[in-house]
Amino acid sequence: MLVLVLNTVVVLVLVLNVVTVLVDVLKVVTVFFDVLKVVTVLVLVLKTVLVFLLVSNVVTVLVDVLNTVLVVFVVANVVVVAVLVLKTVDVFVDVLKVVTVLVDVLKAVVVCFSTLVAFVVFLLVFLVVAVFQKSILFQSHLI
Image (cartoon, rainbow, N blue to C red; front, top):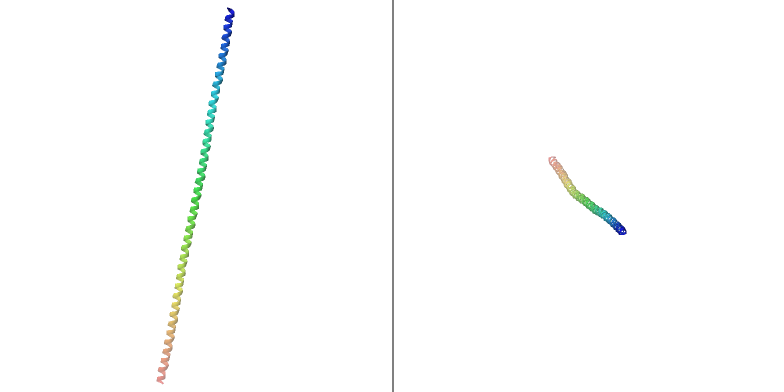
């Protein structure tokens, strides 16, 4: 009977050893699940970093687009200024044309006045000659 009790004790010890091994296996499985949780968290962190990088790339592209739009506006402003300068030059050319016409009118007025002066001088000379001739005729009648 002692052998039976000893055998039973040995079997109980063996069962305890198996239970201990099973507990250790369960602990290993638990650690494995904990490691899987950590890996899952790391994957989520990496996905978050990836999303952040993608968002920063989108922001960079938007900044580049805004810079391009700004350059287009600056070029448009330069074109507007160039058009205004050309309009100013066009107005200046028109003013020069008006001044040229005024100068031509003044030349015509000067020619008219010089012609009038020449005519008046001619008339004065004619009158002086006529008066002189009359005076000679008058004096010759007197003599």
